[in-house]
Amino acid sequence: MRNPLSDKVVEIKPSGIRKFFDIVSEMKDAISLGVGEPDFDTPWHIRDEGIYALERGKTFYTSNAGLMELRQEIAAYLKRRIQTEYDPKSEILITVGGSEAIDLALRAMINPGDEVLIPQPSYVSYLPCAVLADAVPVVIDLKEENQFRLTKAELLSHITPKSKILVLPFPNNPTGAIMEQRDLEEIAQVVIDHDLFVISDEIYAELSYKEEHVSIASLPGMKERTVLINGFSKAYAMTGWRLGYACAPKLIMEQMTKIHQFAIMCAPTNSQYAAVEALRNGDEDVAMMRESYNQRRRYLLHRFQEMGLQCFEPYGAFYVFPCIKEFGMTSEEFATRFLQEEKVAVVPGTAFGDCGEGFLRISYAYSLENLKVALGRLERFIEKLRNEKN
Amino acid sequence: MREKILMFIEKNSRIDLKELAVMLGVDEVMVANELEIMEQEGIICGYHTMIDWSKTSTEKVTALIEVRVTPQRGQGFDNVAERIYKYPEVQSVYLISGGFDLMVILEGKTLRQVSQFVSDKLSTLEPVLSTATHFILKKYKEHGTVLCTGESDERMLVTP
Image (cartoon, rainbow over all chains, first blue to last red; front, side, top):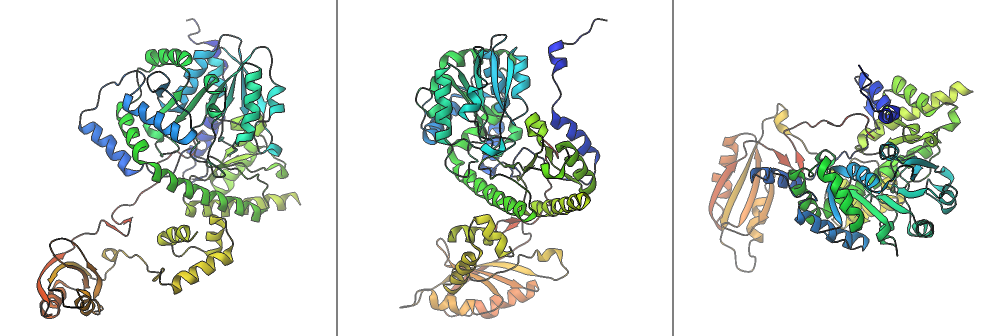
């Protein structure tokens, strides 16, 4: 029999998180700080709308781009939140989660050999999706001393004549880093000067704790160079509904829609109806959840301080990214021992890129009670490690 | 800040003050002061415990009683409301709009005790025109807390 597999796919490394997941799932009574999704249930009025849509028999395909009603609500939302206007007819596409939008954007814009600039640590799928689209991924290692923001100098030093796309993953999973307006302005200038395009993954936009989230698409000259990606998973606690969207200039969107049409057809109809309700009447839920995450964020940072665990202050998403270099072990060793000895799951920073070495991703999408128990165990564990060293 | 403190302690009044201050990003002394002032001003009226009595061996019966009354000159409903709420077994009294005037929530040990209160005490008040008593059969949700289900974390332990 011939080899049935694609070399390109075989060569892609499986997600580092997957590996850790397998270890965790063998432990029965482990508690976790390892999830990348909200602990809140989807607000009931949104779920109710989903149920109602089913009752009314809304069980058929929608148009490829998604319900016009939903695209109009998204356009209104973006106008109100990031002061940027998108045409619901030609510039907005409803996707199966933000992840599909990442894949579509890369596939629609890449020619073989084009370079995609990917800042890391970042979400696990940019790099493999770029490889699948025949791009050459160019990783930019972000640094703790810059609070894991992307700087102009870092970007400039990775640009070559083949550079085409910059992936901009802020607020960031796993570091919790954000980019403020002045940071983005510097990046936008480089992007324009070097005729690049941006895929801006803003799935955590609503979870910004310092100032209102700023989108690079809202800066002068950037809308026509940006594919903006957002969705309902994080802001409205709707991960399982699998619903996201992309906004892009018509030229790009036409090609993205083509791939979506052939590969996906349309996003889940039921979820789309629920999402209309989320955008119309969900602002208060989002504010309530944001406040709650922010309280836990402060609590976590305070506890790290008490333990003497070094951690920069993140202002976005629901992750903190403490540094564990003082213990002289790799992130994976630390996470594995922590799991075995204290039965708490955290994700090694290396799951999000090699430069995540020496860090852990700790999620605060947990109730305060859970956080307290888990942090108590963390404290005990690092005291033990410090004693071992002395 | 007051609103944030209130919103938090309304759900969890046993929170450690230091932790609350950390979570709100303010000084502990400030939180303590605010709480004291709000207690003095009567904004915070008490720190109660929510109990699902049906899970204990203590028998309790709760009734919602609709009361129609004749308002009195110069006092409206206040005087009759006061005469009702002074009874310790009365949990709540509300003046409400609609088909009747006062909603009285009463807690007793037995059905008999509650009906005795209604027939002996409540109905005999001069301004009271009529009453309608509804007994609570099952409490699903109280003060924003669902009483009848235990929820567990359905999420996978590690996700990207």
